[in-house]
Image (cartoon, rainbow, N blue to C red; front, side):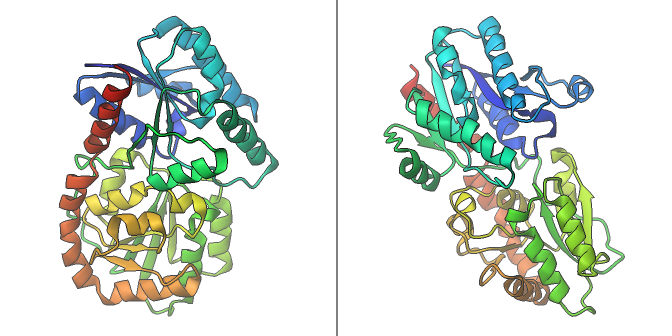
Length: 378
């Protein structure tokens, strides 16, 4: 049976750091014969007009603190009222749960709740209010009002059971994935600098351990030719640049800013080793690290922290170097180990792309969701 699926993500989709979960899952579900529309908002109307995608529908929003998401949800309701039918499957995440009473009014009953993460970076009053209004209250009131459920990991599901007494029995798990059509081993350009290139890409925030890596680089002997390349944007960018300057290592840390998802494989290919420095925090421990899959698909060795989300995927991989903890000294030791074992790591990481292709392609994750839909919504 083929489904018409409308996937709500009440964010500014054009500047969302990780769009691949939605776009790649949509592509995979479409390849299985389903119709998928991602319903989102935008920041730059000209950008989304120029890069129009027939599988993405955009609604307007008010660009005001706290009001933004509420305005998106309201406009999503009017869009659904106009275009959705009661046979459509509506996928929502926790911050769209507030729409459930309105969806019921429209006669829409095939509502599927998908949760990918726990709240992160709740530092400001605005962050805490967002967490209250679009996380705690919706989950308390409406989390058991859906017909279908999925989670990124079993660990996340258990944590939500503990916090919100969800007691969901019929659900599915689909993890992060990777498209090996986009991420695959490439021969890098000849490096004339002869620097050892350490690479990170993704959201830039203090809680992700990037600052600890910068501090670790400052502990290295100054004679070690190393460059830490950071690609991405986020709330921690200014603070991390200031830290780099304070430590006097501007010549060893390069901030490259935002780059399109489609170009990332090219950038990864230039690295000697990639790093995922997530620290020992609950939100990372219950996650599924998409960047790790992308590094593996490109055939790159990695420096990883010993959190459950990393251990669940590559606990015995010969191309992974593990930090002994989460302090700068631990990262310094791991970086030195990587520098001293470059040839071994480069050779052993050649096995990583096939492993990822077999187990963590987006099409495998989409198949899990499709099977669950056939059991739940027929």
